[in-house]
Length: 334
Image 1 (cartoon, rainbow, N blue to C red):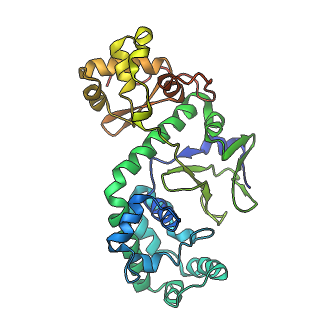
Image 2 (tube, rainbow, N blue to C red):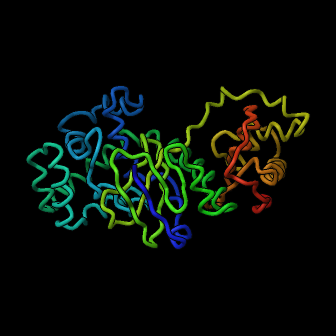
């Protein structure tokens, strides 16, 4: 078990990443690629030529074993700003850190001879590693990256809904069952027993489509980061027709609620529900006031996502939804 120890300051400084991190997703997808039954999209990427041992996987798989430790330098915080920012930070990793982290990896797994030049911080070796990560990411994750980012944004919206309206402790209660908040400690299901004391630094929570379970950086001196699996989204086909809600909400508003698969913008919501842009905005505001919808502004658009309460209502689930209080209509029309 991993025990993350919070202070009052840590709760204030705890935050959710803006979305999927390209290097975390790259590394964790390499874990998943080695499963007996990998994600079909990952398996297709491997068959397309990226699995050639002379290609990127020949360099990456020795650094990312199927399970267990992998070097922290593969997932620098700068990647939150984009893949190229992360790769640039990786290529600037100090030699002492490269040696130390590769030594830990080498104690647990046999490493090929070329990793010695990487441990020595040779620029050519670092460039080859960056090129392998870029090629793998673009060839395997790139075709599906928009879906990955949408799922991360949808999950983030749910967490922020709880954070904005109930505080950090309310948000931390939404991560069960693999993460359990017992103030002032977050207990995380983990393969090794360890403690992480935040000591006022706060915690960055990063949603991931490829994480099997929560993952933290191995080096506790680095900025505290916890990557967690995004909440599974039920297939649209599994939802019942919305007509049963029409007597309660009205036909148009029930149609708008039914159209909230993923995190559509107001324009997308209007198109799906077959209503005008102004009507979609008005209905979204009413649903948000009722705590059924959460809305988040991203650049020039507002995205809408079902809250757990809205999802339960739409699916006919009568179990009470806890931990996410209703949201006031704070964004107005869009």
